[in-house]
Image (cartoon, rainbow, N blue to C red; front, side):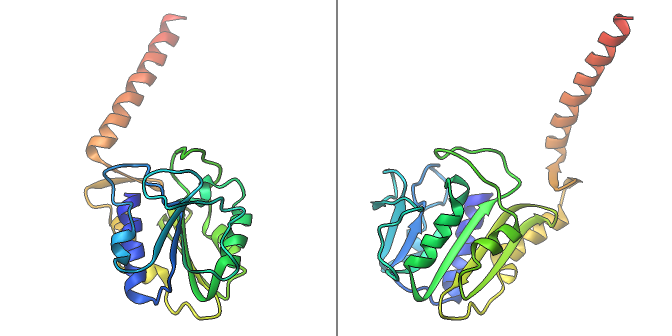
Length: 224
């Protein structure tokens, strides 16, 4: 779900906001083949630079988010998607994103909250919406949205601007509003806390758990 949702999110922003060049993606390595995680097609004909902590597919330039080699105000649009959880110091990273962003620029971030550990190459953090507001506090205008249960969201999104107004609410973007509506409606799915499970998924979980409990019960009875 994450990659198609991110792709739609960035596409919505590109349609509704002036995103100045150069557009720099921080964390651009395409580590999961077969998923729509290459953002370049959304910015065809525009100057796009892909950066990551290591070389690999989609990486034009190796950069450490904690100590970027870009000059002050050199970046027009900073995209940092599903990357901050893999950065050892996300506060320093966001200070650097603010430093390198030009006046009139846009910074876009996203990350995960209720999702399993996924090492690319390491996984350090989980962020709440309030955490994102803190990370973007130095910018002049910002907005944050989350997808999933309000108390236990799966994904968190943020956008911020420097020397300009953002002028939109992320929760109203078509990609995010549709994803939240799907979560709330849970069509043909069973609601269990923040999770939404199909009947097949629920059957697998219950089948395994019921078998485990019955084995424990039998072992207890036989041991008496």
